[in-house]
Image (cartoon, rainbow over all chains, first blue to last red; front, top):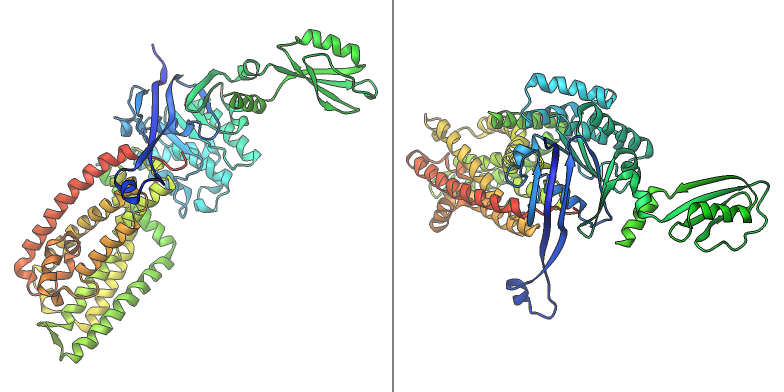
Length: 328
Length: 266
């Protein structure tokens, strides 16, 4: 049985817009304007299994949001096919909307002047739930998202963290099978971010909701997503388990050296190893594992320095992602 | 059934929203009193210096005609254009397009809901006040007045929503629809009889008001005149013609607009 919830095949989106040609007269610019074409998404393909948690990452202008908007039926693809839960978003947008939830981090779907319950009830009606189902689901969401303390407050009086929890709750009113989130943690503080990530993880585990998110926050990717798709210039450049991102993309390891007493000198290092930090109490070196393996570099470093402790680790995910973007 | 339930919910939610902020109603009321009141005082004076009759019309007819225009304007149906433009410019359109609703249906009912509370309260109070101050013309007391007023009011509402939706939908192509909105809105104001009661229009202008969609969107202003009793079905027929025409235009424009969506910032 095929349990893919999203199948994207050769998806392309081009935007055309008019540009003013300074060499031409206004009449020509008005009636025969020059057109420029931008390929926002270029022939991408991927599939997502039911219940998976996917990070769809890339630098600004990479094509992430455009892809999400095509997946939800907001934008029409120039070419290619999308199949979400057996539906084509371009033809079955409304049917599909019953199956998916969307959260756009920079936009609100809630009524600012009314208490949150009004927005939740409103979306319940919008998704054609019966009055009793709406009440039941709101009670579930209040418990799940811990909304009780501010459920009766006007939305505009909520903190950004509370509002984002409310936004996600509102997008789950109809128990969607997939939730697509476009930068859901943008602008949140670390506590609110963690709280939102915990909640998303919870709904994924408890309701088997597929999570598809775009984010610039490495924490979202690291904490939440088991698989990462990297897109740049509209092209998928990598699709792999999140934990493999560091090992696949970066040929560098970090080694922390803690001295027995203190480091008095910082001699020249063997080829393939360079200093990242020179301190009396700690040295950090970066090893290019393409040039020298870890075993060899440790042996050479121990010959140079007298150390009490050694720690070998990968670079952090942020560096990895930066590295990926810069390469492409 | 789902559509009716959603429409009711939109209206109920927006009325609740209005009740949370009674100051908006007070501002709307003062707005109508200021604009309509000043015009009525001016016309009262003009009719007075013309011995109470101009072109066979008395002040009472003119005053009620002008009032109907302002009462109708409290519904703010024209704001649907700007709301659509804001949706496009802010990118909010993506939130609505991701829901299981028709964007157009949602915006139309939203617009009706936005002004309904103010309309009912202000119109009720103003009818009582105006009736008390200047009285009712005989034409407003005959049997067919109320049913035909309701009929033309419903047609005018639908036509206004469609007319301004056409302007609003243009934002899918040109983003800033303000110049087009300004032209259409002023045409509706003038031909609808907001500045000058339709009974005082010169013949050629009266014909334009009668046969153009801009005038037809305000036929409620014609209902107080004696001629209404004989030609109401003709005027409602004109409204229906424009409703069908603009309905088709809106339908096809929206069909194209859906494919033209490009969300700012995305």
